[in-house]
Image 1 (tube, rainbow, N blue to C red):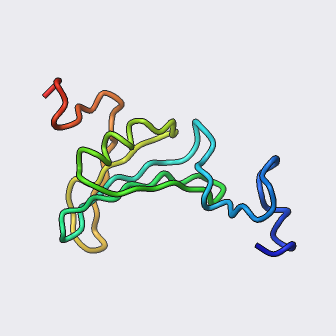
Image 2 (image 1 turned 135 degrees about the vertical axis):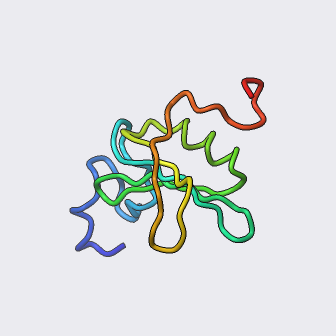
Length: 103
C-alpha cells in the first residue's frame, strides 16, 4: 500500500494493512449468502459501508452457519434466480442450519 492511501485506513490500523482484509465493524454492513456455483460451492461475504469485507465459501450449511455468526446489521440469502435476476430474502437469526440437532 502506498503512503497516499494511508489516510483512508480506519484509526488504529497500521500502514500496509489493506482495509479490504479487515472485517466490517460489528453492527454494520450486510452479509450476502449464495447462490451456489455450478460445482455446488456456496459463497458468503460480509460487506461493510467502508469497503471492508470478509468472506468464505463451502457447503450451504457451512456458509449459513458462518453468516449467522457475523455481527452484521443485516443478512440476506439468495434463494432463487438466475443471471442478473437474483431474488434475495432476509436470513433470520433463528435460521436452523441443516445437519444441526434442530432439523
